[in-house]
Image 1 (tube, rainbow, N blue to C red):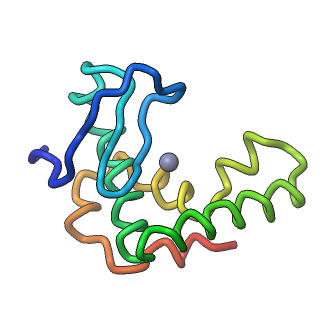
Image 2: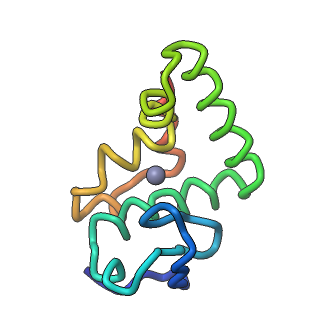
Length: 111
Ligand SMILES: [Zn+2]
C-alpha cells in the first residue's frame, strides 16, 4: 500500500485502535501503522470528513448514531450501522477502493 497522504500520529492514550480526526489519523500504537485494513478504514473516514467539510461530518455521524440507537436500542448495533461506518467496514479490505471511490459514496450506505 502506498503511504497515506495524511499525517499519522501515534497516540497511546487512545481507547480504540484508530480514529480519523481530519486531517490526521491517530493510532494507539506504532505496529498499527502497518495495518493496511485499519489505515484504509480511517482514510475512508478522512475522505468522508473532507467532502462534508469536517464539522457537518461529525454532526451527521452523531445523528446517524442517534437514529440507529432509537431504532436498535443497542450501542454496538447503532455504531456499526452508522452510515459512515457502513461504508468504511464494507470497503476496508478492498485494496482498490481508495482509488475508485466516488465522491459522497457514503450516501449509498444511508438507510
Ligand atoms: Zn470507522
